Amino acid sequence: MTAEHTHETTTFEELAPQATRDIADVAAVEVITTAAVHLMSAAAIKCGLAEGEDAGELLDLDEARKLINALAALVTASAPDIGNQHARSLRDGLRSLQLAFREASIYPDALGEGPGEKYTGAVS
Image (cartoon, rainbow, N blue to C red):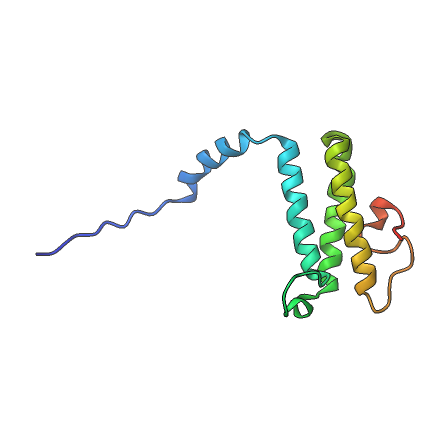
């Protein structure tokens, strides 16, 4: 007795309409804040703020700079549209990351030259 197995695969074309419907149900402020939280989390790890014994091995300030720049641009551009409550918490997180970056740097950037500071102004 042999059993025939059919292997059904789902293609991107089949998943795209469902994903479009799902994202259509999400408010813009939620999409923006979710993206910001992902950037913050990645930047924190790259600034050496990860928990665990290997946190130092994950330190990568070049990568952290890119992530913080992207986060600063997103927060600055979206702040007028997402409201003060959301923008304030994102700005606080961003500032904490900028300070952590400065602290982790062997040769800190000049004030106003750190990651994201072209969008936020000098952070000290």
